[in-house]
Length: 189
Image (tube, rainbow, N blue to C red; front, side, top):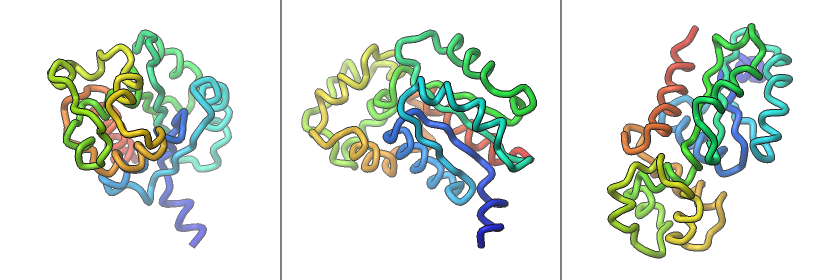
């Protein structure tokens, strides 16, 4: 059984916090990849960035693939992606996908109001100007989401919302890129 787990779990997903773990897990489940994915949670973006090179370099499996998911946190997405990619050992870059959440994970929630309703997350209705906006361009999506949501805590919200997210949604480009990144790694030999 242990050997089977080692052979099957060939995709490592690096996330910066427990709520991102919950969302990555829900998406992997919806893609039918949960048995292949191991999600490594960190204590913030700094912890993720400091430790990923060592963890990737020391991964014992030759065919492992890596997905690094980090919030943009009001930084330039392209520059941040390049910086993270530079931290990955050269020999593993071809098997690594970097995805940036624009700006914070809560933007993905706001991009899918039906998921928020199904999860029972909302205490107040989402304003029409938010519904019609590009969710990835919302300046402080966490603050906005928390102002609309029931007080359940970030991790509990992620646990409830994750299973309700539509993996085919096109409302958030960064969410769509995350889903396509997982699919790409799953198809890679």
